[in-house]
Length: 65
Image (cartoon, rainbow, N blue to C red; front, side, top):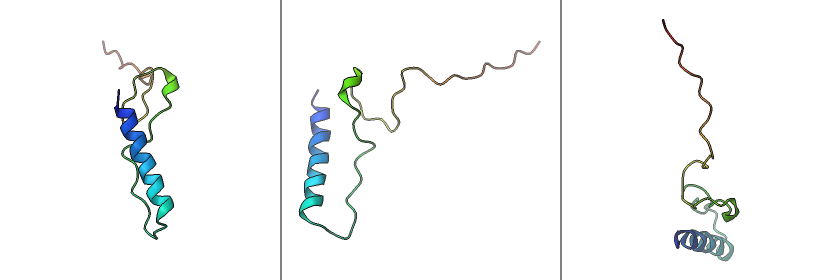
């Protein structure tokens, strides 16, 4: 349950560091993606792609006689 808190702390630290020292070099990007809002009712997990409720529709293979 503490994974989300760790991600929030990391993002908060990045924003504080960015606000304190305006350096010409861009700040390091956050790992993977920002955490999804916890209001979707799904377990929060860091994934490179957003979790979809159902897989994308795939065309069935052609039936050969």
